[in-house]
Image (cartoon, rainbow, N blue to C red; front, side, top):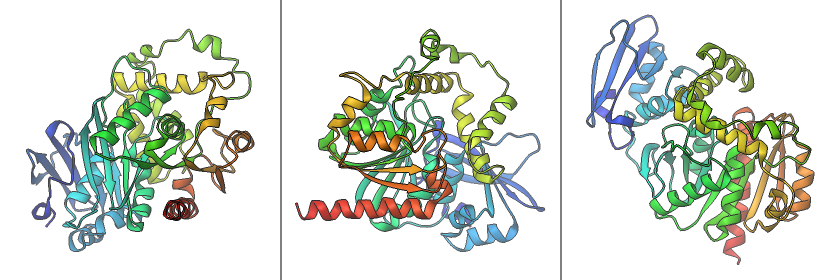
Length: 386
């Protein structure tokens, strides 16, 4: 039934071919071979390394086959476990759902003036472009996409350059200005004059840059635990300036060590979402260009100047679009103490505090998405009344 419903227009397959392992607990496994816009099923062979895996019991798969909404609901409920490549795994569920209505979940890659940008989108209406954090991919916005699309928004989550399935130029700046230019190029390629921009962590810093550079193309900004320039002395800065991110071409640590480190900083303990987050990080990090992008972006976040006429805290005072900051009360990466500095620099901005750490859309999705939707609705009313 899944094979009969396969819609190649819904899934973007990097490289043109992929193999997705479909495992039925206790009953065996099959491979879905995607090639040249076609899908065929074959018995899985021992030793074959699939690009992505989807596993669940027979009841979960029966639900997927009988109801086009079943796949995504089973995934969100933890009855289907996706590993290795969430882009392909979720894309497969979307492509075999049989859902052909406008606004359905779909995956695509867009060629822009800067390079290829991978994206997933759902919904129709006002566009909102979502920008992920350092080391993450568009997959971190799966819950947010599901929350915004039914509310009348065209929710577009992208892989920033250097991450996920987007191009990874080398050499490149990988600072806020660099990323913002790619966001502008994406809007051009999608023929979107202006959009809401939502950013998390590093993506929040990029969203701020988009708002500063192009207020005419920014309807509103939603900044979730955004990376901000440090106000205290950066004691490692002199040494870090001597270390070139291009050294990331080399892989200094074995994969198991990298995996343990990443797992320790992703919220959720041993949950399936934690495993997915680790997989998504490693997909880029285990490639030479992906490591360079990660190190360069991390280095730029730490070294960004906060003070002075060209410093971050001076530039952010020029922020014009209506803006919502979402803070995590338990956030150790971007402490909520930053809120005081932001209130001084951008007094017109709105603020919401969530009882979460650094990833509120995963840890407290209901409260986070309600705050986002309320803000966007208010933005609509403000524009309607002039």
